[in-house]
Amino acid sequence: MNIYRILKNFSRIKSWRLKLAGLLAFHVTGRRYIGVFLDPVMACNLRCRMCYMSDPDKVHRALPQQGKISRDTLDYIAETFFPYAVKLQIGCATEPTLYPQLPDIVRKARQHGVPYISITTNGQLLSESLLRDMLSNGLDEVTLSVHGLDKLTYEDMMRGGKFEKFLQLINTLKAVKPDFPRLQVRVNFVMNADNTSSLRRLYEVFDGLHIDILQLRPIQNMGKTSYDNFSTDKILELYDSVVAPIKERCRKDGTICLCPTKDQISLLDKEEKAKFDPLVDYLETLTYYYISHNGVNKEDFHWGEENFRQYHSRKHTAGNLLKMIWNPKYKSFDTHSTRKLNYDIS
Image 1: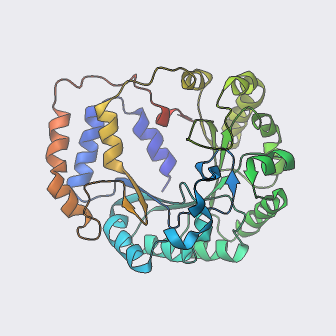
Image 2 (image 1 turned 120 degrees about the vertical axis):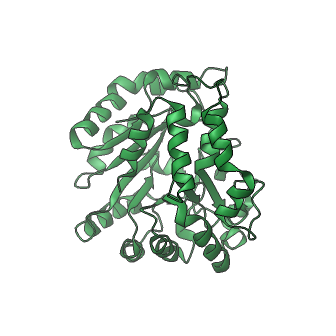
């Protein structure tokens, strides 16, 4: 399954009523329509300066045993959510390779028929044996969090990481790719004033390894972090000379590029916030499931007591969807823009 093609086609649908009607059809027929974003352990081995894990007050980040999903909880998550997931992303705000039963998550997801399974990692602890184990169990995508493409920038932005280990990981991916041709390699890069220029080395560093998906994300304020320059002026200054050529190279190479336009980046520096759109909010609420050892991002979900169908039956989700489809006050939301959806998919 090409999950990015699905997202691109879905984004092309201009009618919100048609989008909601499609979700209603998937919901009542029991088909897959949600994304599951799972943090199996609430810790990280690095202190990336742009991440909330660099907050010195978050002492739990070095104690993975305190925020680890148990085997019983993992079974419950798999049985409750995986049958309805289009995609499972393992690793969102923390480092999943700290979880000792990582291949079990992949295996359970494949057993429940999840068509696209991805892991997001800084890669410092991702050995070839672990990678092969996950790929053998059904992993589709490895997403590398990379915030510098030279030694100085990489180790400054990703405190605790070693650039040499990152280069070793690229060689590991090259080694396993022939045995697992379905493997998709995705690179996530958060651009800021101090690392955007290093993107010039992208294709030198990844020489010999095709990047299937590239996400270039402008920096945003994530709270108390050790990096506090949230201006996008430098990104905009370098956009035409650094970012635009990469987008063009992606087009030629067949790489899916998730990158905002200059206008979309400019909006991030404006003080006024995007207009609240109840339909967009409801759409995200309906399809986005973030899960950790604390539960799921639905405050009224009876964790450990009910399943997916019971929850939505109690919430009257089908009826609410139908009401929203035919509510006359929702006419056109084509111009809506939010900070979460500031990407062109090309």
